[in-house]
Image (tube, rainbow, N blue to C red; front, side, top):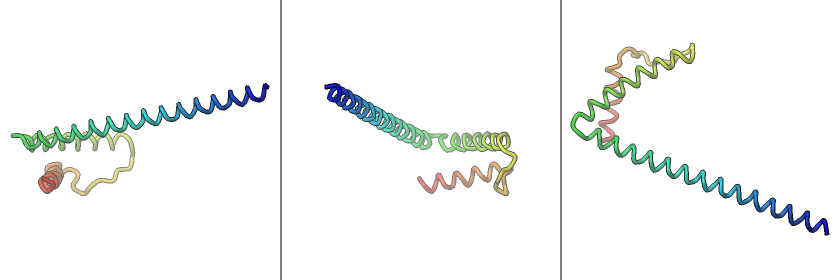
Length: 105
């Protein structure tokens, strides 16, 4: 009799754990789906803003800002940096990035 009760308890525990794993997986899938949707919407909004008047100029400025910030972050976090030979030529690097943006358009 005790064996049957123990066996039923083990089955219930296993079913509970299986249900928990399923719920966690479903929650993770929903989270990934929401992030993907939000990312897609954000990219669409950025693309639309770039097409507006002054959009390319705003993109140029943002790229330059981020380039400088990221260079500063590299210098803070490590003592070894691999950099392009024209690292000081921010305008040239932004121009190269923008030529890629224009090609994609």
